[in-house]
Image (cartoon, rainbow over all chains, first blue to last red; front, side, top):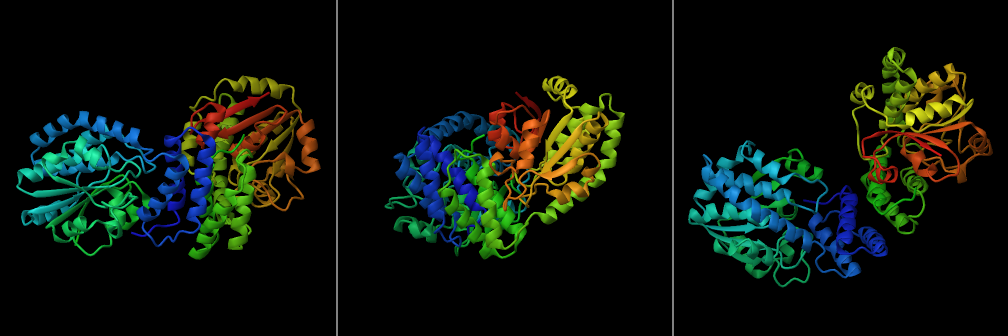
Length: 286
Length: 286
């Protein structure tokens, strides 16, 4: 998905948020904003938002001297999700269709996202998850799953890793072999190996960094930054599951079938998918 | 009131909105965004938002070649407000305290503002206006009004002029002499003489442009751009009434008593006044 001029104010909101998380020094906040604006003047908006975002956050890290401004936020999200996990596991166990419930909850986990403007009340969302319809593509997903043995599951955010765990548990029970791909380096609140391990994902899946070897990560899995390892799984897995908006933005146009699970939080993504902001999405791309 | 780094994304949202109103040419939209970002890199944020906004909108006009991108929006606001006016006049007439109702409605008119991010449902707001409390400063306003003969009323937006008319009618009935100060030139959706005359304000007040003689207007009355005429009224009127956020931002720190009537739409203004976003405000500044 290509970026758009509407992304500019959003990048700048995010830059200010990140700069303030990294330091209390207001002069540095101002330098961040001015340098990000200088950078965005020379950016091509035919690139995807996660590609542009990578450069933006590099500026923030350099000016503030913080390698990981969202570390505290990520730890908090992980702790919150860890507490919610047992109750959600019960919900999956007691559901009429446990796989569907696990999918719904894994999508709900995508609301834990400090990189976009809107905030959702996670606990309320969990309660409502059971009632929400997912649209017609669940059957298509189930059919594809029936003939899939190997699954590449591309992670999105910290905290959300516990919601992914619910779905991976179900998939592992069904005998699937799962690769869970996180980011190699900190970028916004995206999950890294540390977050995946904190959630105990290694009990159900092999954890890899999709962009292993890169010095900077993007808040969406960019194939141009993918490790040879990732590319092999990406090309040869029977199914690819992609979580979140960032991964949707970077993978929506690539040439293989992908199951996208996300909450739509941005009007441009909403327009691209053809669905309203605030909607949980299971989209099977051919 | 000083601007803040949070104003940057807001200026850029506004720039894109204005550029799209002025032209369908996407290359011009991109040029606007990039030039506004270049401009904002060299701006001091110790200036007030309306001062900075003046430069931003100058860039938009120059690049798009449109002197008045919001003209259609202003005409639409005027037409809408004109239709609502008779019903509102009835509300004032039937109110227990007609002056209070006229004030409440004139504040509601301040929701007609395409220069800020939030939109409100005007008709719903009108219905609710009667019920809302205005806070403790109404009595203070009434006391000040009792000893005031001459009033300088600083206008804000097109459309809103009809809501101001309700209040000015009441003030005129009470024998007050009113000067209604609009902008000399188009800026966002701010009212100019054309809008004030369309609403028939001249029946109750003398209409002036507060920045008469300036080539560019600001979306807040800046004393540094004021005409000698305006300054005389500003210094010698018994009461100054200022409508809207823009005028609050440009006049909140000046050295005379001012009655501010506005809807709080921006978190920074909310913080400055010490009140929540979405709240109607009557504030008597000493």
